[in-house]
Image (tube, rainbow, N blue to C red; front, side, top):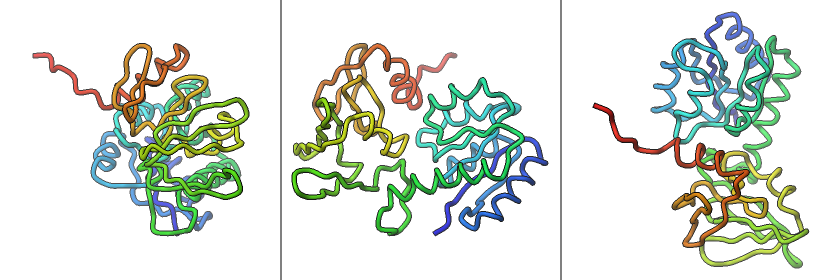
Length: 246
């Protein structure tokens, strides 16, 4: 099954190069091509794609601001000539960051990363699911069996030394012999957010955020100072309804 994508860059030569690369992959399905980020934004508000390949520095709206403006952005691969944007991009949970001029092998590596993430969310190759919607699933080994858990039903994951405890919305807990860092690296980016060195929380399940804690499924979990700014930016600011100035 092909991966639907949108290409965005204000340089027509870059767009030509990307489309040539796409034709070589036989896995990407280009749904739209834009050189204007505002047009791309309007398209993304009304259409679903699985991955966005976007330039960073563009007139009117940067690629970073475009991603921030979307309540549920697709998987994102950013492209730029300026490496200083990389950290800000990864703070937005982008999948990859391509430095221009973009080589074919580097582009293919990004595509492989996207495909791997989408396969994680569709382990049986069933009908397409947007990984960020949380409708995919994963297996863990617990006791003497393998247990399937759906992303949407996970509330939060807690570190217990070499184990992690996965807490689900139905009140069950599952212990698995994988540490939190290792588990986090294998989960699709964008679904879960680290709120504390010992807690990983389902972003879609967060009910409230305060200075010292987040609430999820009726549980109050600590919000570490190291993670506070990122959680506020990603969870609150992206969908905050603000008072209009008159």
